[in-house]
Image (tube, rainbow, N blue to C red):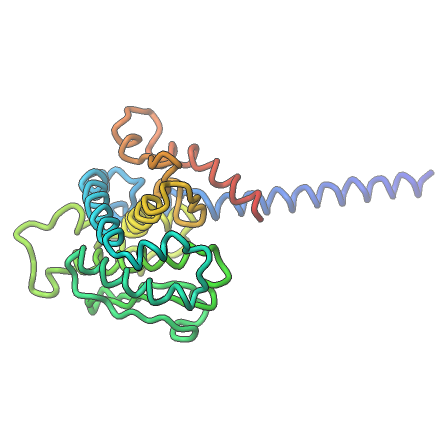
Length: 291
């Protein structure tokens, strides 16, 4: 009888330990996903969820759509690119690369910037799939990097979206640091100021969650830009589930899944960050199901 009691006690203890471990893992996963006020308040002008960045949202979105529409129009005027986009899922990464280079040229022309360095190889930035290399202390055009081997293992459209996204960072960076190049405007725009805050936060802060990093103004807007272009080119039939938060993703009607402009303009006792976290639960659960 005593042995049974001991065995039962051990079972209860093991169950409790297992439940505690599962709860701890779930809490850690949530902490790694949702936006954190404690981190963002350190540099609030850098984050789309903070009231200090509210002046960025509307003008930046208008610019995003205007320039994204211009890039879509430029791509659609190019017969070879139009044909390639139509059969993009059938193309290997090696077959995609010449078209990516052409889109890179069109994007920099549309944005009217000096082209950044474009590196497409499997070794220049070990461990990276894609990357925009920049240094706020030494402003330049930056470097756009794509790793073809890693991209070949992902969704076929990821290379296209990431090329557009990372190239967008060069536009942001050049605008943010125009004063360092001797092109300082009479008044720094909320867009340029927001980009600059975000790039500096990216280099300064530690402990980003998924939502913290991807609501940095530079990441938030670059994902919107790329997702809009790819969405419009594919008639909004493509789910870009790995491309930023829902605040930068569009549904099948071409509408943002989480509209931060609308949230910021809607009176509420809850902050935009708190309301974003509630709405982001759908993305958290979507990601959890895939793991």
